[in-house]
Length: 188
Image 1 (cartoon, rainbow, N blue to C red):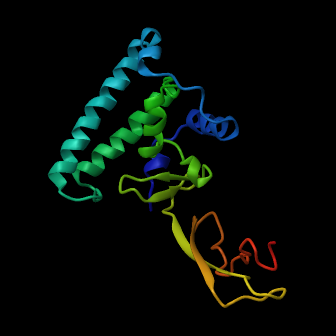
Image 2 (tube, rainbow, N blue to C red):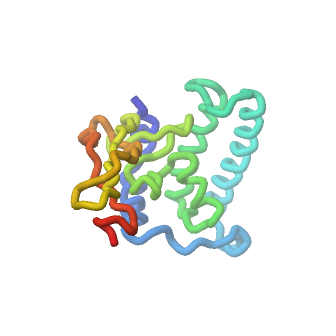
Image 3 (cartoon, rainbow, N blue to C red):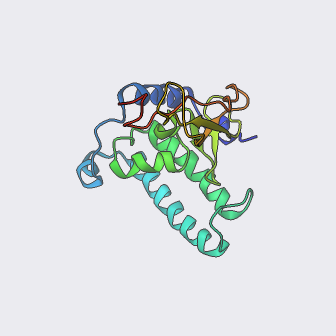
């Protein structure tokens, strides 16, 4: 079970995520634009994130692999970056352009590309924002209706992997909606 998010998420972060989902991220500023108004606490958090970013690069080189393993140094650094990113959000740093990308990359908030439902774990897999359970994928098969008559086709199919939380969501049906290519009987 992926409980990383449940340990560090706060009500405040969840309220902010709900706001981001409804309105999008706040207008982003470059570090140069924001720098004059940064508080001492904000500077401290940014310095910690920067230092851990350097440590992460060193851990990646030392690991000689593409994915961190649970409990190795790289994994621990990514967990700390996750927590620091949430702390930075709580300290009002979400308006920094460079930071908006990092909060998703380190799983501090759910990924907008995943409909704000899932967040990244240190090993680059996803977990459910609501319960922390690891995300699975179900293969959905879509028939291609490209035949000359209604509901007919050549027998070809298209497949896609659909993510879902095994705890909060039903497993998607393997039967997908038909696809009608442009120019076919079904999609002139």
